[in-house]
Image (cartoon, rainbow, N blue to C red):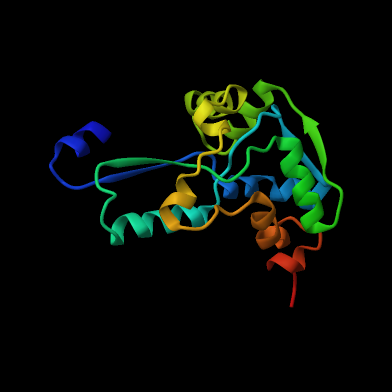
Length: 175
């Protein structure tokens, strides 16, 4: 598909974000209910803030000089699961535990959401052996938008209410 777009003659810019910080929202239910994150791996990831992806897209669409370029998008730090949990714990002012599960348990959990086994294996496999581009900080966001990429600590502070045990803080309680 990418080659077809490149060969089409239309100007293009390809954004290649690595793991989105917003993927962390998949932990919200277990953190609110039990104060725990269950994942099979503690690999580093240079997660990127979804607003930074949007900012790069806006610049690429509105400013000249981006046609024919592919942008690897990461945040400003590569963090392990333990490190992300520590930052989330600070943001919500509550301890969050890390419970290691098996690869197969993670695949089965994803399949329970309707994902095929092949896709679940692919996703969980990505965490088992992340690529260098997913674990290495890249300064593209800062170069394109002219300011540093947002940190995971900033993202955690912005989204802390999703992880707090008091469900009324994120819109699910009574008024």
